[in-house]
Image 1 (cartoon, rainbow, N blue to C red):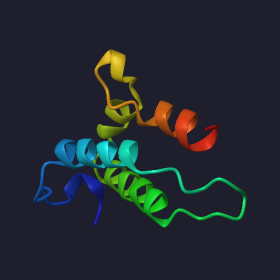
Image 2 (cartoon, rainbow, N blue to C red):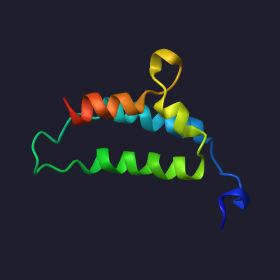
Image 3 (cartoon, rainbow, N blue to C red):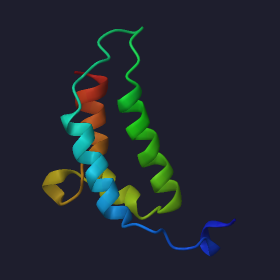
Image 4 (cartoon, rainbow, N blue to C red):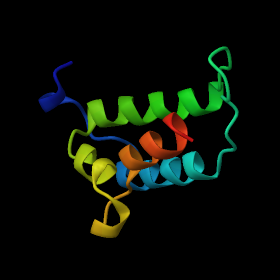
Length: 84
């Protein structure tokens, strides 16, 4: 079904993205080496990606830094998850 004719979501996408963002920030770092695999972290990120595919307007809110009123997920993933 094309995105422009998809039925409305039965939940608040911004609220869900905010909740997932908070869960990402409080999730302990598990991947410390190349062989580690954090299923929770990857799962939460996949859910966010799927949500953005369905609601593209969330992309700017997720990517905008917290100091500028966004959720700052891009900064968080880059700083805390990739280069911690």
